[in-house]
View 1 (cartoon, helix red, strand yellow):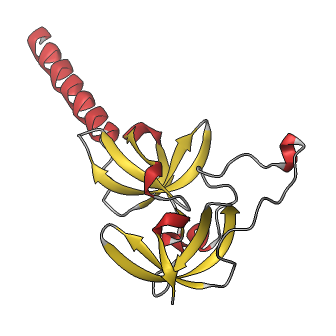
View 2 (cartoon, rainbow, N blue to C red):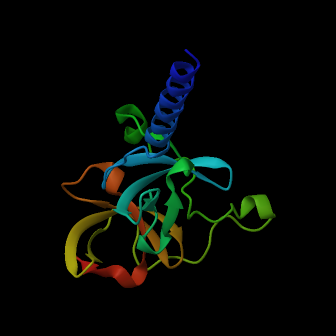
Length: 165
């Protein structure tokens, strides 16, 4: 009877280890829209690459490709729902602190493009049609890619803009 109890405990222990391993290795897919803890606050991001069993590379929503970061899966707190993705992010991970909160002026020098301009944007060797949705800095603009959902909107440096259409 004692041997059976030891074997039962071993089987139960093994089941617990397997269950814990499955819970820790939440599978996320490339392209998935997720919430990521960044500086202790949740921000929206897209999974762009799996770099290991428990690591992924994400690109923060509303930011250009220089804002990709490799993170551990435990920093992903959930998936962004359809209703949440329809709303613009209140504060992208790449957005600088507000100038007003620093006591400085709220407007900077004018960017070479203005809101509403239709432009071509270079991305990974291709050029895409987009429209300027906002000016975030003198050398950065928020663009919306035509034909794509707003989840793909991003802040791009001026040097990626390949001229007006």
